[in-house]
Length: 296
Image 1 (cartoon, one colour):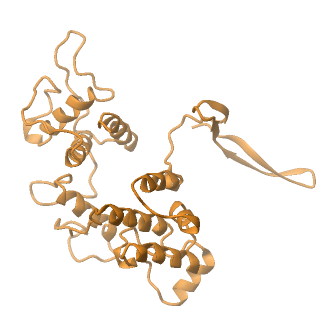
Image 2 (cartoon, rainbow, N blue to C red; image 1 turned 120 degrees about the vertical axis):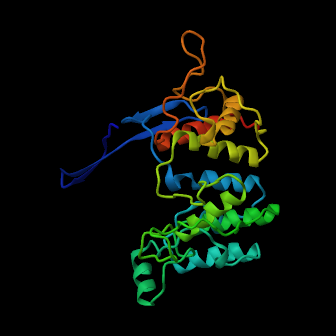
Image 3 (cartoon, helix red, strand yellow; image 1 turned 90 degrees about the vertical axis):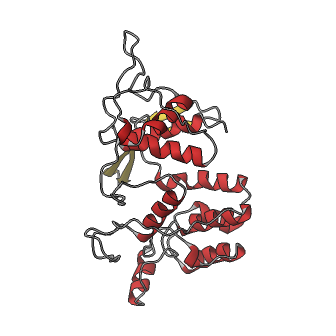
């Protein structure tokens, strides 16, 4: 990834510091009109995606405007009026801060964080900087009659070694663990035959395909294939538990990125990487392709 100088701080005619980065500007048609650095390099959008997420919520029926709409789009600093705004969003949907399932944290603002700690208060979902967006998500669910999702989690390996949750030990965050339980409830996250989920293990390429396929089927966007097709990556064994998910994905999307379905001679091709660790960018790529073929 190539960064370039995008800003200089000048004091009394001398360059005091320089700041490197990557930037790109596009017009209404998506054409690049200005760029600096390697603007095609992949990056994580992180919280810059919040306004786009809120657009989807508004289209799904969320009723927000003014400063509460801004709060839903923001990474707030945890000041009193921010927290009060989150409470107002929740109350309007007949919810409370106990319904928030985002990660617990201290306020982002240094002064607010210090005051919070001096008051002996623990990290909370309300104080965490994303709570405005999550409150808006819950309100959107309520507006549409959707479940706000709390199905528990029966996998035994939240903590390593197994035992009750302890924030000072090697345990998965409770909010994240609850989401795993929701995915299990919806038949997306199955876990292993021994009843564990192995949340610290590497995610394999074929597991990514199963995860996406099950989600698409659960949302009724795809029809699950019930008959195997051994012309599709025949080296993936039946006892892996992933063949029907793999066949379903390929039937809807086509060949996987970097893995043609046939050899140069026309024979069914193997998928060499099926049981290897999958990088995040590949996960994003195959998810994007799936969504493109969702029929929506």
